[in-house]
Image (cartoon, rainbow, N blue to C red; front, side, top):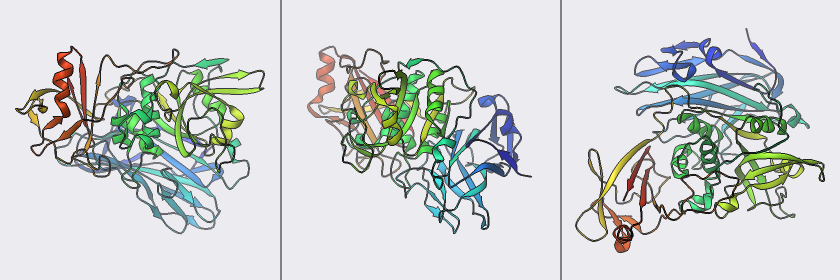
Length: 484
């Protein structure tokens, strides 16, 4: 028998997760406060009941939080029921792990299509031909190679909307327990400019940078390059996959999911002390094909920002929201920018947000990324160094800095900063590891797989007493850090 749902979202966690039908999984009540864990190498799965919705939908997005050790991955799939046509086939939101070339491939049948290609990264299943679905079902498949530590899933969520209806926005709600809404909020969240990151891809990592700021608000000091290489969808070649971005936050041990909601829902999260990721299309010009939004950094046809607060402006007669926009040309220009709700509402055309909650869940977050401490050791010629980790020198492919995101494995970014070079930030916002002047120039890999520094600046800066931090970000899930 189908389970009937009100509202426009469902979050399956803890006890509700435990009640699902499974194959080759066991339930661990402690891990993540309740997780399904694969029994043995191979494949296992759980499946939800059929959910009948209060109001039909034509667009549905799934989220999941999982821990995926090396050699493992998960895949979440869904199917939708359209009256008069029946069930669509099972369609995938993509194979997911922090250690694989994640991809959400284009898929369709006569009833629906999925997922990221047509809308530049929006990870949804969409009903075809102007019709609407009245039910859906989800399943998750966990995979592990031999000798791998077993993967686990602790949350699966779905959110939906029906853009066939003229006033569909009014049915986007908020699924969590509510608190008393505060009169005014301004959270001291980090402000990080995507423009000041690796110039090879800094202009297109708004989603990753926004989630970096969100986790930074909880004290997590990951860098945008790490998040960028972890939420990248190799299917369409970008970072805009909503589901992958919240899964990346989940990989660090936090609860995170996608939600179609309203401004009241946004204010609820802010009143609880949580920054909100916010999907927008806007222009700083009044004659653009996307909505005009005052006080913006750029014109964009697809972008993510973070909402860090709000207040009611009596003179304007409407709410004003504080926004940290990663498109700012430097960290201080990220924000907080103020946007009127009436204008922001038009820019918020898809009504999607990222939700993330504080507090790492028990036993989770161990497999997001390997952080390895290493030393720079001179290797003979001036400016040539070995990066020596616990197991010896690390050798890099000479094309390591080419195709940093296009080709999975053996590629990545290298950046460094001096502790004395901090970027300027707003007084109201929290300082983050990323708020240093990062440099990505003057480094290359030689034919022997060693690091080469033009003009041997490590030795010169060290001689001046500077403390330098070097990061090597591999796109397969390892970050090397060296301090000298």
